[in-house]
Length: 285
Image (cartoon, rainbow, N blue to C red; front, top):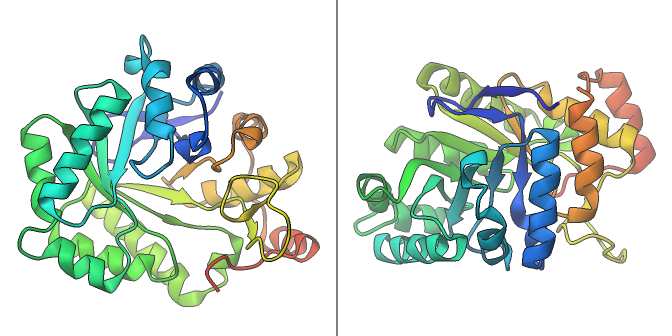
């Protein structure tokens, strides 16, 4: 079974592998139902979706009936004003068929203009405590993409005591000294304050470029059991971190199998050889 760990200060023992529900972008309720069955069989008890993940919330709603207590449920808002974000949260709750989520996250708050709006008067930061006080969300977090994610997350953490932080991490990003140092700073701050650290894009092989898209992920993913295990092991090597599965249902069984097998942390030489063999590239270059 996939190991559990305390999800920051929330009191929840989450599986270290989380279900990245972007995989349900075009899914039907039946497909979501089957996916949740696979998750429960593997011991995954944490779902991470977003209002902007296509049909994900809509598909999850029926699949969660009778299973709500089995999952720590997280969603996200991409709105930057208080009023728009709270309206979107209420719409998410309706689609999900629940009266609250366990974690409500600010989605991809890593561009300067959006950050200024979010933190200014009437910005979405003002919605965080209101969502909690109204019982719409138990905890709140912030997420981000791109090379600037660690830097702007640290700025956000200086203004608000988030319960979780989410950002990309993989072999290619670990080769960037400034990015790696930013992740270490967030990790250290998390140990001090007790917030959870989530990692995404751990199975990124490279941008699609001109190659045909064989998966719904917005990057070309790593495939094959041994390579998936190496990439997951590299991410699990970040002490205390939780890893989101890749956003494609076809990859889910292999990811669950690799995580359940308890992949060890591969060495630098092993990862470098895999990176060369697969032609791995930084998605954000």
